[in-house]
Image 1 (cartoon, one colour):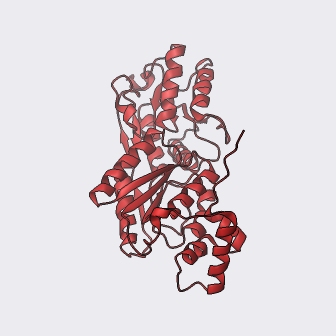
Image 2 (cartoon, helix red, strand yellow):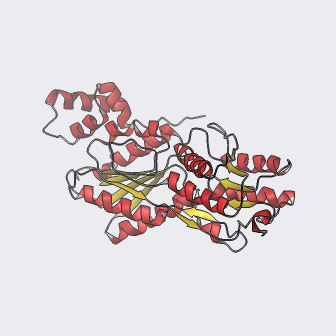
Image 3 (spheres, helix red, strand yellow):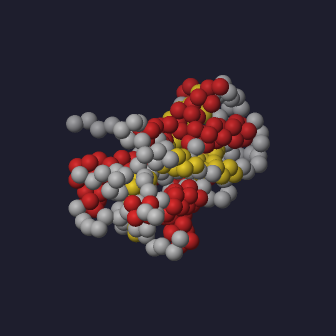
Length: 343
């Protein structure tokens, strides 16, 4: 059986020539700051491994092609697809098209996405990195390419737009406590997730202020299907007693799996247990779901990210930081605890 030869990348060229990713890019652009010897080494490395830049991009050095790139961890997640839609709409209003890449929560795939965009000579890139560790590898590849990060997975030396996950979780748990719930369970999220860490931080802060401890379901490590894990753990939870008063789900997708398991086990939401999600995805507002949740204002986040990126493309060298305040969206999956409602 014939196997397809792996496409050479800018990473391969940099390793063979003994230079950085950004040096490879500048050498191929014939940048005056790169020595003739280095340019020759880079070109020789390209020829040796068969690296070819995107033909459509040749001759466009210094010219805008009015194209932005965007990398997300999981385009099948309604949160990221919703954000991508908002970004594409705002980019189109400004005369730019958007190319989307799905990293599939894989570090190597994320780096390949960046490399692919670099070969296309895009004007700028928006990245929802899968982890701070993966983001640390981007800087050398990106060089001076305009870039804005979205979400929490980044260092402090870049421009980013993110929601305050600690504050969002804090407000959500305060709401549950105000309804009279005392035994509140935090459910979901991967153990290595920085987002989970921040939401758990807000969860615990609100409970501590109320003189409560709460519970936290042990989270899975990397690997496996998070949605299936959520469903199976919820089934186990609903077969034990006593049930918690309320569940604070890591995300709306997690909450949907909890609702699915609750229906199968004959657990009524919110009569038997209150449920609160996070992200305010489109499905959460459907009549049969009507999930109380926390909005990160993903559409606004996407619009701001585009504005900040276009600012860099126009020459603004200032690092920008935008921290959005989440909003509690009250619907029908939480109710006053019966004992708390009694006079």
